[in-house]
Every structure is written in structure tokens, then in C-alpha cells.
Image 1 (cartoon, rainbow, N blue to C red):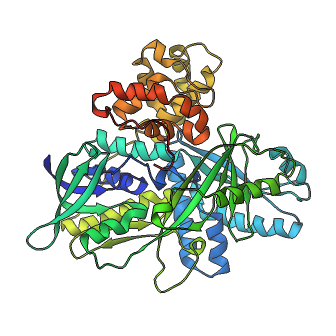
Image 2 (cartoon, rainbow, N blue to C red; image 1 turned 60 degrees about the horizontal axis):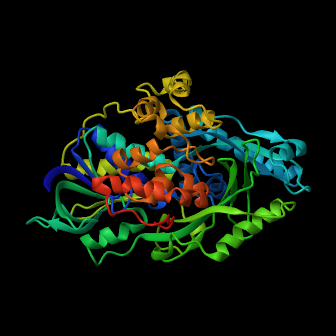
Amino acid sequence: MNQSFDLVVIGGGASGASVAYEAIRRGLKVALLEASDLGGGTSCRSTKLLHGGVRYLELAFKTADPAQLRLVREALLERGHWLRQAPFLAHRLELALPTSNRLGQAYYRVGLGLYDALAGRTGIGSSRWLSSQQLREALPGLQPELNGGVAYSDGQFDDARLNLLLALTAEQAGAEIRTGCRVTQLERDGQGRICAVLSLGDDGREERWQAQVVVNATGIQADAIRHMADPDLPPRMLTSRGVHLVLEADLCPQGIGLLLPATDDGRVLFMLPFFGRTLVGTTDTPCPLEQAQTPSTEEHAYLLSYVQRWFPCLSELRVSSSWAGGRPLLRPAGANRSSSRVVREHEVETLSCGLVSVMGGKWTTCRPMALDTLAAVEKQLGQSLPEPTALPLLGADGSPERTPQRLCEQQQQLEELLPDTPLRQRQIAHLQANHGLEAPKLLAGWPAAERRPLSEVIPICRGELRHAIEREHARTVTDVLARRCRLAMVDQADAERLVPEVQSLLADSRTNRNLAEPSIDLRL
């Protein structure tokens, strides 16, 4: 293959998929190249929160740092954007912030009031007092000496799915998406400017991708691509590993999460409702790049110790899944700060050879990252980009405000298409959460035998597994069971049970033959 593109984007995570999506809206011819799976790195390993960052707001005032405040404001606006644009993937989540005295309660009430105010018209609910009784009803088993707390709202979402749908939406609008495609070289023209990308596929096929502009959106791997362009560049990325555990116990039965405001080492820690279980995270451990996705026993113990401290009545803590991911932090210029104090801002760098690199940032702000990247692309092209055309996310209505109503209206249709099992209502919710308004059309195209739920943890069916392989670029069992659905992220043992089923479907797919690994590896 030797096609010519306006823009080649390297990296299929949140930032790369967002750049491709926004570029295709502006009429550019786009190719998106991903070395492994769409969203397979940091972008599927978040705390699953769309949030401004309460911790950054507190740091803004404690350190008199306006950059932290700008980040919170921007992220809160983007939280509102995604809740509107993808209501089937994202929803409001209330979190409780407990206190031991009235002074602490007043402190957090004032801070969270400002947090609400910064969201402006995109606000999703005001913070409120919680009495001791209300706190214990929401979080049974919480340590008894607490004196109530404050509840506030943020967003919870399916990170891997949103990443995927951004890429698939761009693909349906004309973008070329290629996974299992590792960039090996940046080619230059006679003036020393990058004019093409050379790649190597998992199948051994070499390809050349001619481009007017190349964007490096590889997250924690950004320095590797930068050094392809200029080996003498100073590194810009810091890697901090965040570990998450999923507990079998449901510590949040009312659907209200818990924010622990200050651990012994100054971090905040979340315990969140997650498919009838509890998601606990996250750690913040500086580490070498190659260790970013490998949880340590110390980090496991660290998280479990805080669960036990805050829920002392728990006699047994059973972990059904865990994962780690590296945060793409920008190295502070001329400063020596711990990774927990690094501002989660992003930066767009343009080298003299024309390589544009988008670095840093966080999931919630992937859209501003993409827009800033396209501003740099515009300069490299030497012309203004057209105004964006409307391009609703796959699964959403053309008018986003209509999506929730249409989701309600289609539930009866889904009920008629699904087998009558005890899991039918949960299966309807699951199908809509994954596919939005596309669910009835997809379901109608699957044989009746492939619509039966295969798991009580997440009621996925064989039709979904096949669809993930044939239409959603899934190439391995981990792609299917950890990212196209979240079964492996919730209960790895139950996901392992379905590995033979997925392997069989992969073998049936000519393009995926011999690419299935024998088990699920959340480090991939």
C-alpha cells in the first residue's frame, strides 16, 4: 500500500482517535495507525471518571497555581460535552467525600461549591451535605467515627468504548484505520521534512503512508516517535503507574462512590460502583516505561489496606480483576516535582522537520487536545481548515439531546429481539451501553442462537463477540473480552471461561487467523 493522505496519526488511544475524528470532520483525508489495539494502552486503564479533578482544584489554591485552575475548568466543560454527546456511554455519578468533623465538612463544602460553579452551564448537579446516617446508608460498613460528609457529582464512562467509537465514527466517515501496525521509520523529503511513515504489520507486511502532516499521539510512547525524528531531542515524558483493583464486594450499593481526600502519601483514592462490584484506585508510582502496565504486589497491598481501613468490618477482600496503566505526564521544565504534583495539562510540539506531537493531558480533555493539535496541523498545511461538519458519535442521534429519549423508546424493540431469560433486562441495558441506538439493528442481524447471554457478570452474547472481530478491529481475545466488552476488567476468571469461544470466532475470521493469544493478558 502506498496511499497519500493529508494527515497520518500515529497512535490509536484517546488523543489519536480524537485527532482522527476531528480531522475527518474538517474534510481531511486521514489514516490512523495503531501498533496494537485501539485504546489498548493507557486509554483503557483509567479510573473510568469524566471529571474536572477535585485534587487539582485544591492544589490550585494551596500552591497559587492558575494552571491547575485552568485545567479543572476545561475538564469540567469537557465532562459536560461527553455526557451530552454519548449518554449511553457516560452518566452522572455522585461521590461522597467523608469528614470527621464540622470544620472539614465546611472546608469541602466551600471547595466543592466552587467546583460546581466552575462547570457553569454544563453543571450536572450541586454538591450537598450528607448526614452521618445518609453516609452510612450510601456506604454500609464505613468506619463509624465519621461525622457525615459532602456529596458531589462527576461523570463515569466506558473509556475503551468511547475510544473505539471515536475511531469507528471517523472510519465510517472515510478515515483509514489500521491496527497491529507498528511505525518503524519516518521518511523525509529533499528539504528534510517528514513526508511519509513506514510501518510493519503483525503479518509481516511493510507499508508506506505518504502524508502532508504526521501527528505523534502515542501517549507514554511519545518520546520514541520524537526520537525517530531527532535522536538528540531531550525526553519530555514522565511515566507514573496507576493501579486499579476490582473487588467482588459491592461497597457502594446505592450507586454513590467514595472519594478518600488524603492518603498517607498525599493522594486521593476512589472506591466506585462498577458492575455490582467495587473499583478501587489509583496508585501513583513513578516507574520505567516498560513497567507501566505491570502492577506490583506492594501497590495491591496499598490499595487493599485503604479499603480495610475505611471498611473495617470487611472480613475478606476478594479481587476479581486488576490492571495498571501509565499516565502520560509532561516532564516539568526546570523543576523537580513528584508525579502527583505534575499538572495534567497537554502540549503540542512541532519540530522543524514537521512532526507534530501531542503530549500529556488526560482522558476528559482529549477533545481540546485534538483541537490544539489540528491548529498545529493547519500551520503545517499552510491553509485554514474548513469549519467542522456535524458527525454524531456512532450510536448517538444526530441531535444529541434526542438520544436519551430514543434509547427509552427502543427498549421494547430490544426486548422483542432478545430471548426470554432472567438476564434480559440487564442485556438490554448492556447492549445500549455498548452500542447506543445501533443496538436493535445489530441484534436483528444476529442469529437467534447468538443472542443468548454467555455471562451473568456482563450479559454479552456470541453475536457481540463476532461483531467485535468482524466490525470493530478486535484481533485477540484480550481485545474482545477486555475492551470491546469489559468482562475481563470486571471478572477475569469469568472472561477466561469464554476464551475458547472467542478463539473459535477468531479462527473463523480469515483476517484474524493465528492472531488469538491463548489467554487474557491485561498487560497488553
